[in-house]
Each structure stands twice: as C-alpha cells, then as structure tokens.
Image 1 (spheres, rainbow, N blue to C red):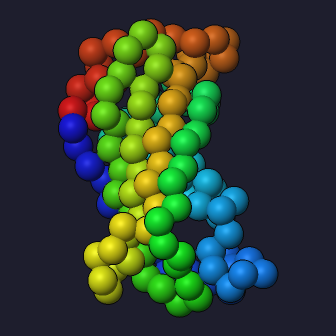
Image 2 (cartoon, rainbow, N blue to C red):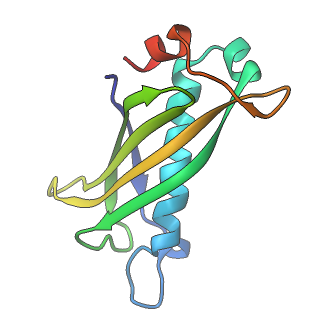
Length: 129
C-alpha cells in the first residue's frame, strides 16, 4: 500500500462554536486528501476515464485540533474488491504526533462516461499498491 501525506494548517473558518475543528470540516478534508491522492497517482487519461463516489464514511474523533494547529494527514487504500475500495485517513497533530482523528471510507469506482460502477481492474489496483 502506498501512503500519501498532506499538511493542513487549521484556519478560523474550520473552527466551530466549541473552538475546535468542526466534524464537517474533517469530512471535507477526508474527501480532499482522497482526491489529492488519486490525482497524484493516476494519469490524466485515467482520471478522465474514471471517477469515485463515496458509499460510506466512518470517523472516530480522539482529540481536538485547534486554531493554527499544523496537521499531518495520511491516507492509503487498504483493500479493493469488485467496484469498492476501502480508504483510511488519519489526522495527526504535527507537533506532538498525536492521533486526532481516524476515518475509513468506502468508495465506488465509476466509469466517467456512464457514471456506472466499474470493477477495479489491475491497472487501478497497481496505482495504490
């Protein structure tokens, strides 16, 4: 499995009334890092041929992220079967390396032209492993 990393600095618009990153913001970041990972691996030809859609998100929150915190986000595809892939995302406080949030998302591969589910073939599997 190939892990992908990004960094995020928590901005004011990420903060909720409890003064920490809002859970909806984490969900957006989960999708953003998945997209960035896909774009870093897949050629433009493959990106035009296929799209991904979320089937299910599971998110566990362990500790809050606060304004101006610097986060390390790690993601990887754990397994793929049929038309589905299971992607993991972890958010760490960059300074302390403490795990803040863990997410698992099930994605479905679509043929971009038809928007119909497409079996994940070896060419796509090889990108992630």
